[in-house]
Image 1 (spheres, rainbow, N blue to C red):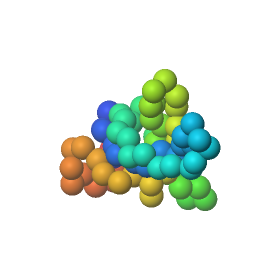
Image 2: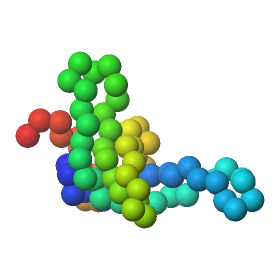
Image 3: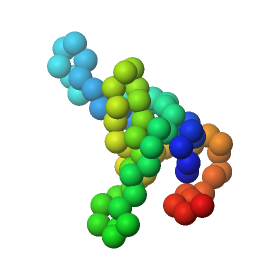
Image 4: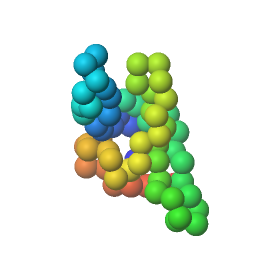
Length: 74
């Protein structure tokens, strides 16, 4: 994945009644956070409705362009 790719992931939120819900959202990758020691999972930074989130790669459901493989080093 690269900066600029569109990703789909589940976002946790609570509705007006206080119920915990998951909503599939899409966003554009703004930045990548890669731990060179491999202690922490690689994450990407995205923005959704004015808030920034760090999404671990394991929580990404799909990407566009589809079928791309993870590219850590160019």
